[in-house]
Length: 271
Image (cartoon, rainbow, N blue to C red; front, side, top):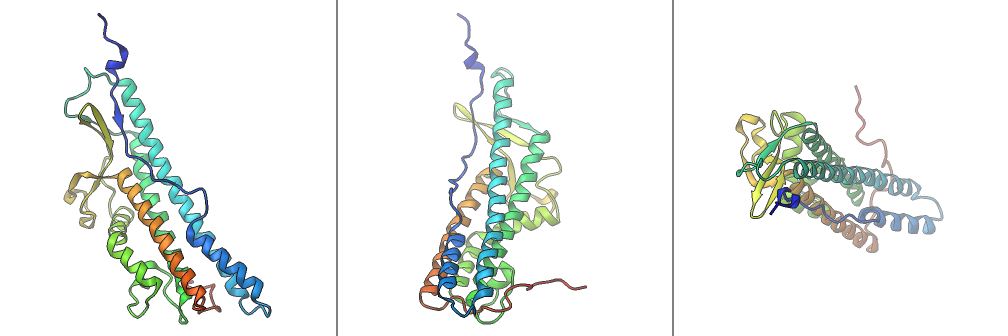
């Protein structure tokens, strides 16, 4: 009796994407609601600068989140390409019992997309910090980390600090390492690892990015690009909703915005 072609196809699973909303981020919707009410009630136009700020900066924020979503979906698509190619072209007889590793232009594109993904999320965090800063009378830093460092500030900044301790610090470690020091490896691979009757596709990440040198990196089977990327997106979505809730609560208590002038041209570099 002949062996069916199906028996020679390797079944490979890849990590799942998070759910993406069809609507704008919570912070964008919240600032839209606030600015519409401000525009309706601001007869003298005293809040016209804030109105422009509340229209523009949440949209810059959304731009970076859209970029992050695009990059994460691109990573998933490249995983899918690798999976399909291996499944079609490698038979069980050719498949090593310990798995296999692949390095080609597609695997490099996975990591290029991942680095761009980290940079997009980092930019979105800074835009979030800039919006939160309007909750205070005095000028605040325009970067996420520096705003969190202002210990006298509370309210939504407390929410940012909790996220910083829970996941942002780790995320920033990866971003700084890959952008300023070294990629994940000097030749990046996608690994196909046997797992029961199926196999798993993964692209490794170092568990100790602050070493900042390939020679010192350590790896774990639990840490990989797409899984971590999806987890980051879920963390960011939860933070977006929490900060939006904080700001709306302040607004309803007539405590937002507290700074309504000189909202633009902040952070300009002079030489």
